[in-house]
Image (cartoon, rainbow, N blue to C red; front, side, top):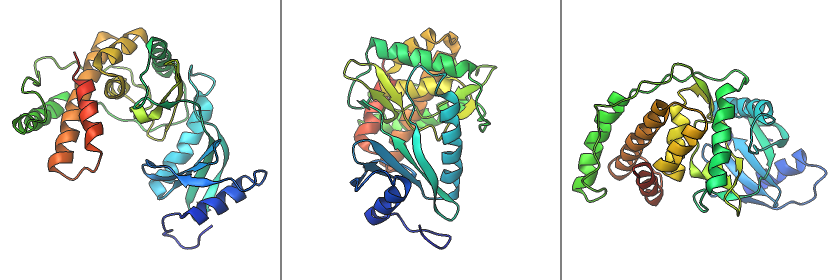
Length: 285
């Protein structure tokens, strides 16, 4: 749609033109920007589709990998993943996809119920044994290094009244990472979990960050989304060893302390209420 090597941020006119080109069978579908699009330019297309436009070469590579991964996993997973009805290039070397919208609302707005926890346990269990297209390998993170940084962050946050003074880092019990890496969604935050009115998980969005790595990372994501006790229950029901759950909860606790501190004292621009809510969930006992 654009010439040159550095396309500008897509406008509503660009999005409408791309939708007309990608979905010629549809007529005059309205487009509206999605409030949170991450590294994509993301647009609602009517009430049936989502348009995601990659803005750089890295996002393009991950979007291509995501489309292949979703197709490979779709029949293996107990929850829905988006399906692309049109995809291609919108500028030289940059891609887009038009996905069918899945039902449900974000887990940030609706709680996951007991059946939803079982859905997530089946999801993690399926990912443990999934054979997928080639994905990047992510080495396990060091809990010792994260814990040391998190301790400093918690000290400053507690002094400013941001967290209870009783939140402490226990460096005496850092479980070793699992010996067998698994396919990871790698970003199981609440905004990527769709929840039905009955509390079931109706879909999982945004597989662009998927890697092969430490299964504790997806447990950590669930701790941010559902709370630490629920994440531990899901991990156990998925068949993960207790050490995987313990490591995942520590990753979540250290990460949330560091992210909130970076937002308040550094250059992170994430919403403060969300970071506070995620910290509270991850540190639940």
